Length: 409
Image (tube, rainbow, N blue to C red; front, top):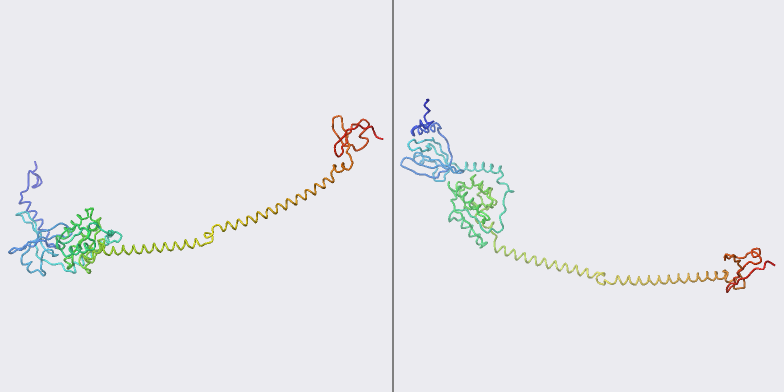
């Protein structure tokens, strides 16, 4: 049976020294590297200095060691929070299995380099849209509870709370005290920001800090903090430094205040000013209402002064008189027409009477009719129509008599 390779099987394991030695050889092949970070710890021994180099954008760090003289001869004083660039060789200590970076050169990051890096980050965040004004959340007019992130017992905390309480005494605060500079500032501020954003009663969050150097304000231009502000659902107000200071969190926040005092003035209304405004609005609304009432009264007076409303029956009276005249004229015309027609009928009746057979009979004339056996009568026109024995009916003015014809003579 073939013997397995060392370290590849539980039957043929490597001893600890073999693993440690191989790791040390592998790490040793990395050679010298340049690394950048913030100093968080600095411990000086007799001949050696031990430090922790932290990445401000992530929760990662490295143990670093160097000769004590390298710290003493550094071109700039080194302390916790200093941004540095180091050149060193990775080392793995086989005795205890620890890793360290043995430093041979230290350079402090200058202000110009810091500003250049901030500018590059600003362009990156701007390209991603984190500064877009359309994404800014509106600040509530009267927040019930204000979340405040600031240093413990700092002037910024005192200014914000004093000014806000003086303007609106009923305002409440949810304070989160953090460090506001140095290597631990970013993680603490981000944690406080997420904690306040999760509180449903917090209406607005204020990040406040007084002025300082570019290095002091460097945490407020950190990419992690900027993205955390952008991810908040609660409006965030940045009140970092003084008017000339402009860290990147000012551009990401929903509102930028020049100072902590300015932040308190911009998020909390002034009670006296609001009461004065209410009085002025009430006075103006009352004056506007009175003017409107007077204007409407004048309109009503003008309407009432019009003839149609001043004498509403005048139009009816005028029409009634016109109707009476028309009725009189119609009655007169009808009477005249009736009289004319009556007279014409009288004339026609007289003519009819004159020309009719009754008048002729009244003068002594008679109408003779032959009567047939059937009873039918016919006017006698000739003597030939009445031979002897013909029955006759003689009509006179007051009646008719019967006779019998004896023939012609």
